[in-house]
Length: 621
Image (cartoon, rainbow, N blue to C red; front, side, top):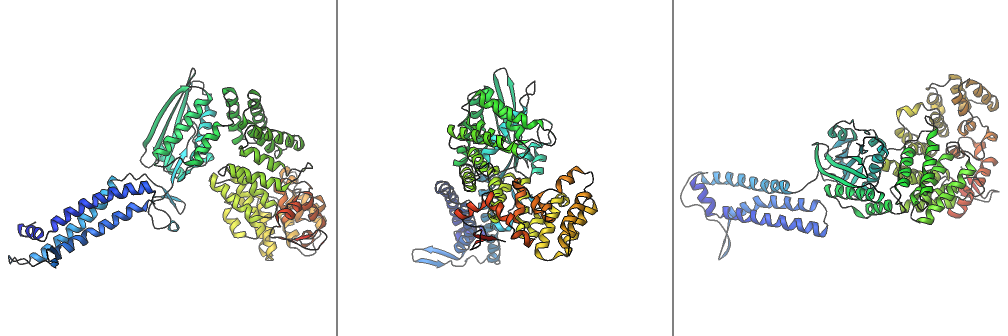
C-alpha cells in the first residue's frame, strides 16, 4: 500500500473506524453468546448476529470514507489537496478489499471459536451434512445420531456376553429419550456383537450415524471393570473415554449406566432432560439388590429379544424359567414380574395354553403393579389380556390399559404396536396406523408393525401406500398377494386381480382357483374350495394356509371361520368385498362376542359403522 493511500485512509479516519468496529464486533459476539445461553434462545441467534456484523463492517467503512464527524455535525469529507492523480480510484479499490476481508474475518473468527458439534442430517435416505428442504433454511441438523454397540466381554470365561448386551440396551433406552438424539435400532446394533468388528468409521457410515458408543467389560474376582468410549465416526476419533472399576453389584451396575449416559449426553452438548432422568430412575426403581436375581432377569430378557420359536422351541421355556427364577429369588423384583407377565402373554401366540397363560399373565402383572404402580409393561399386559376370550372380554379396559402404559412410557415401541393392532381390530384404522407409524419410528423399522400397517392400508383401499411400505421380498408372500387382490376387487377394477396373484411359487392351480373365486361369474365356492384344498398337495404350509381366515373368506366358507381367531385373523371381519358377508349374521355375532359392540356403544363407532334402527343397532360397511 502506497504512503499516500495510507495517509488518505488515515485522513478520512477509515483505519480508526475499522479498528473500533472490529473491537465492538468482538464485544457484541461475547455478549450475544452469553445471552443465547442464559435465555435459551434458538441456535440461529448468534449466527444472525454474525451476519449482521459482517454486513455492517463494509457499510461502516464506506460511510467513514465519504463522511466526517465534525463540531458542526456530519459533513462530506473534503477531497485530498495533495493533487495525487489516480489516488481516489485506488483508495476505493483498497477500501472494498479491506471491507470484504474484515467482514469475512468476523465470520471466520466466530466459526473457529464456536464449539459446533458434528451434526448429521438425512437427505433422500442418505447421510448428509445438510437437512432436507422441508426442515427450513438452516444448514445443520439439530439431531445427533448414535449407535450403541453391545459391550464386549473380555472376561476369561466369556460368560458376561448377556450383560454386555444388557448395558447397551439400558443406555440405548435412556439416550433415545434425550431431546435431539437419534439412537440406532437394537437389531442393527446387534449386528456388531463380539470383538471382531469393522472400524468405527465404517460402522458409522453403514448405520448412517454420527457417533459410535462402544465399550467392554471384564470381571476380575469381585470387581467389574467397564470401559466405554464415544467415537466420532467421520473422523474416527474419541470424543469421550472412561473406565469404571467397582465391586460387582446391582447398585454399581446402575451407577455405571447413569454416569455413562450423563457423560455421553454432555459430550454431545445436550441436556439429559427429564424423560431420560425418569428412565434412569425407573431402571433403579422396582429393581433388586440380588445379583443372582438380576442375572437371571437379564439373561432371560436377552433371550426374549432374540427368541425364535421356529428355530429354537426351547427358548420360550428357558425365558419363562429364567424370569420365574428371578421372581423366586427376589419376590420384590417388580421389573421381573412385569417381564414375566409379558412372557406369559407372548407365549399364547406361540401355541401355549391360552386359559392357563392368561391367568398367569394377569397374576404376574398385578403382582408387579402391587410393587410399583408405574410399571408400564404390567398395565399393558392387563390391557391386552382383557381381550382374550375367557369370559372377561373388555375392549375399553384393553385400550385404557395400553393408553395408561404409553403415558407412563411413551418411547416403548411394543406398547404402541399393541395399541395400534387393537385400534385396527376395533375398526379405527387411522388411529392404528398412527400408533404403528410411531412404533416403526422408535425402532427404525419393525416387521410386525409394518405388517399391520400394510393390512390396514389395504382395508382402507390405500393400495399405493401399502405397496410403498412392502419390501420386495414380501410381495411373494401368499397372504399379501391375496389381500392385495381383495383390495383391487373392492375397487371394482378386477382386471389386475389375476396378475396380482399369479406371480408366486405356490402351485398355479391354487392361485388360479383363488383368482376365479374373486372374479369369475357364477363361481361354485364350495366346489372351488375343495379344489383349492386338493391343490395344496402334500405341502403342509399350504395346507395350513388354506384354512386361514383370509382364504376361508375368499371361498366364502363363513361357517368355517374360527369364532376366536388369532389377532391377525380378526382383520378378516373387516373385509368388504363380499356383500353377503358384510350383512351376514355371523359377522355381527362376531362383533358382539368379541366385545367390539360394547366398546362402540360406550366410546363411539368407527368410521365404517353407523348406529341405526336395525336389529343389531348399527350397520358396518
